[in-house]
Image (tube, rainbow, N blue to C red; front, top):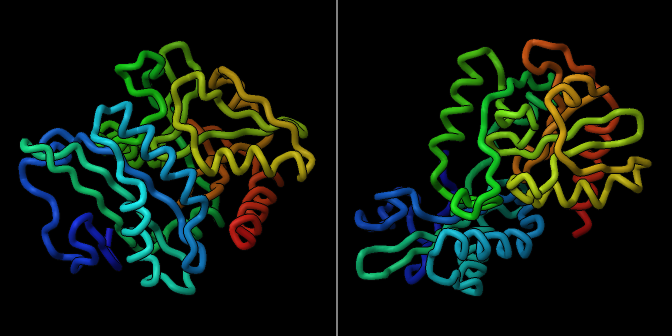
Length: 276
């Protein structure tokens, strides 16, 4: 990930290639840190408050020190002018801290990955992989932690199988979520998406689509659904803050028809971002 700008607690703006994390920080030693990634539209972050809320919740679940919310917001304000007038990715991080209790906050600004719009245009090939339903507290349900090795390994396996991305399905065949996305599908005028009760991430973009769907004439059902229900859908897509809405054209080697909902929700999401 190339960096446009970096800001660090206690230091302010730093050069993108400047070292900013101590070697004994738990973020380095054990991947113990919380983070948020959000899209910046024309220099303005989309639903920054909701992402900060989730950062605080993740940090609490992991057992990190209290997130200095005002300071993290100030870091974001330092890097955002470097994206004035165009779209970018804003990542906020709060680390587990060093052996003497020193935690670090980061705001990282980077370009939107160039492949996303191309993937939206052609449609995405997906593959389902075995995942774990995070229902017990020690499995950190709904937490965004930097311990992302499993997600990265799943993405690598998807690409090894010739797919673009992976979704997790538990041992009972229940659809959970993508490696960095929430999962959706449509039958007639009803949209289906896995329930947060399954321990999946409460995506900020997921919440936005739940708000937008009724005005587009869609009802939404949340629950525990089998992979068979997804494979039998009229269309399917994923949502995330940076990737927005990405339609699938294939899942587990089976063709998935493109439909209207993904494009309509993508357009509505962009319109929402433009006026907020």
